Amino acid sequence: MRTVSISAFVSVGILACFVAGCSTAQSRRADVAKTTNTGAEVLGCGDIMSSVRRAVASAEISDAEARRIAGFPYLRISRFLAHIGKRFKDGASGPAFEAWVDRLRTEDAEASRLEIANLSTGEMVELGKRIFGRAGNRESIFEAANECAQQQRTIELADPRRRQRLIEVAYVSDNYSELARSIGLFPLTSIPVALGWEQWKKENLSTFRRPIADLAVKGRIVRYVPPKSDVVLKAADVRALVERNRDPLLGIPEPKGRDLAQLIQSFAPIWQIDVAGHYDQIGHPTWHSDGTSIVVDRGKPTVFTRISHAVVGNQVLLQLNYSVWFQERPHDGPLDPLGGTLDGLIWRVTLAPDGRPLIYDSIHACGCYHLLFPLEPLRSKLHNVRMDALKELPAILNVASMPAPDQRVMLRLATASHYLVATSVVEEQGIEPKGRGYRFAGDSSLRSLQLAHGGRRSLFRGDGIIAGTERLEGLVLWPSGINSPGAMRQWGHHATALVDRRHFDDPDLFEGIFGRLELGDNVL
Image (cartoon, rainbow, N blue to C red):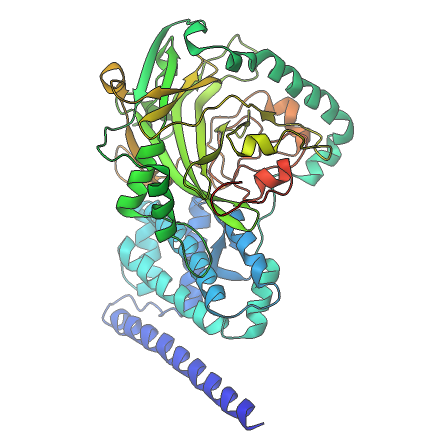
């Protein structure tokens, strides 16, 4: 009993300190507000956070990459972090749990900073008056909201019941609407969709069995090549780099700074594109001066990068993502269901524990055309894999080669459709003079782009879709349950199957396709 009493006393004391801290912060803001002539009422932490959320919702600029967690307005979550959160189902406490919550807070803080940056000047001024009783700037608004979020996290999650509740609601819904599937008679309409996917594979994947030099060219071949680097990473170097950047509490590899830059550069592909028009040139998406339409600046060839994670066996693997954007997929006639504004392609490299690529895969920015390229030794383990549970078989191509440290993967893209039609491995030496250089940019930069006449705006809507990129195919494929099939979308919203339920950012994606995979310390 004595132990319990002391513990309770300490808990009460800690909570009192937290509340006092919050009160002190509010007092500082009150002092500021009292010096103004507005007579504005000073807001408490809860009101500050809700004021920011209301302003963001009213402006329709919510960032959709990480989802808000119901009942926990200071946290946001991704599919990967939801997967990690399952570890704490039977014990929501301890250093690892706190490290996981830290990541949920980071997701919210990053999204909040971008949302506040994307408020118009007028909206920002009004929000500042609401919070401080005067016009505040974006940084002061973010700092006030973030300070309150930190304090609310500390106070609320001191309660074991709130921690347990967090575990119960820490999930991400899939991108499929059961209502749409019901209304669209999915059991019937999915049959021709599955057959259509099989036919597409027959018509478009034979090119991977032919040498790139033998493929037809409709325009001219343009190579986009990564920045030159004197650093050559061997598999052992990659493994050491990844391991020294692994979170010791959660086992998550997350390289930053120079280490990340070296990894990104080392595995960056060469993009070999059949260019028959402006629509085949990669560039940097930006807002037109009219502020309503999006243009791809072809004068700035850019490859957007991000890291993600796969969970294979009991290990968290690092993934390197590379995406390119085109102005459009041109219409092939007035009723072309696939043509429309903007087009993009993502190439992903999943690294094995030994520092070598384990599997490549790619999708278009709509989530369509998911292609998988297992490498050895994974490939040899998949010969007898049965995928009877899948209604929509993915495109698995056993054609990719393992590049040596002085080699680079080259991707051949078709004109207009921008389909990936071949891969090869080439010697890096001598490539750069024959190609056009591209630059790297973080994928998150697209969540807040500069406007021509001041201000900022995300490339994406609050539902993760890029407005104006809808395709006519959506009128046919909506019974799949996917929101606007064919439209370009934000990370975290790429549903990759029309019949089954799969997502590009699902850490269990590969095991969901191939079944349970066990990784050794070095190789499969």
